[in-house]
Length: 554
Image (cartoon, rainbow, N blue to C red):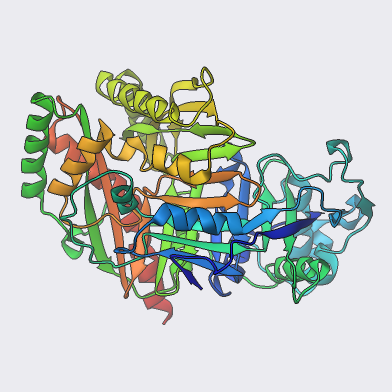
């Protein structure tokens, strides 16, 4: 493992890209379950909401390299950039495998004659996504993934349908950046207690992965060929195909629903109490009246016991709270389960975009006996968020902050708001979002991007530096991964990182969930408290549900 450094040599490792396209059904939960049982897995997405975001889910495990940067070490960005420079894609590599495999239509038989097997194939023909209620079967390895035809493309154009889609992660680093990394970018106080003791940065280098395209309904098996590999590229691809097949031979029980309105908060420990929270809102508003800041993101952390498999919680979140920037990270001594709806940055072919969220309203389940009443409540909450001048002002401030961050790294004249304020719907909340993008200057590195943009303005406030000083003053514990970022940086320069909100850290048989909100001059302290509780319910409900079910089955 690499800790704060990469190697004694600066020699670059050139990698050749190999891939295989498979048109076959996929069971998202069981594939996640398979990878969770491997060494050091990372999962990005794995739920159907990815279709509305960046389109792809990824599963990777057994990294070739690990980069960690610990609190107290020096020069994080020099060491990080050295790690990122270690592996590069060989642009003119000839070892590209672009074999496309399909299941022919005549393989699909009636449900009556084939039972579950025909239902899986029927799902494949319709949308390729198999619900976790469908169970594995003994024919899957031989028949579900048996290729009816091999179309060997030339690799010279997208017309063949076998070239990798634009922006896809083609191997590289997956992991997280903690919020406190910001102290290495700006001179900030350091008074909070770091009681979790996790690395500030942890990234794993993966030379193979499975990608699922939620738009095209296809799987991509991706492998990098490294010098002195002990496995041939074909062996790596075959290993991935076996994992995909194995995912159809196991079952994952459907997680039980939870009542979000009946969380027993007396059983939840918090790093601050309500009285402190309300008084601190008053203190923050005085800073705003004095002209120190326009807005502060203030948060509180919830803690409870957790003694079941972390992947069970990920299954629950992906079913009941599916989020477009969800992630599962196994760090050995800790696990991260993120149900983030917010993109921090995406870089594709030198174009960087960021999508801040500001403004939240609760959304309740519209099924069941009270569906009519629920629809009325949701319509009221949606309309309230649309019309809220407070939330409009908050998002405008943060959008402007992000534009100012982008000016440090983008070509002159390329920054623009490509999507003004809009309301997006999620299972438990409505969010107000906007999207800003620009063209990176040619000399800009990934570390330059992080130093210019991190942490995201939507979870600090404006101006950013003074806001972070006040956060350190008012929040008793270090945020760690919360409001940092999780995602990937590939060896071809593309990247996608979330803002690590709606994120649970599991360590030492305890689960930690943190929620906050933007405080402005006219914020109502009680309403801000209620908003943090609303955001926390979906996280705590999932924890309670999987814990309760685990205790029943043990």
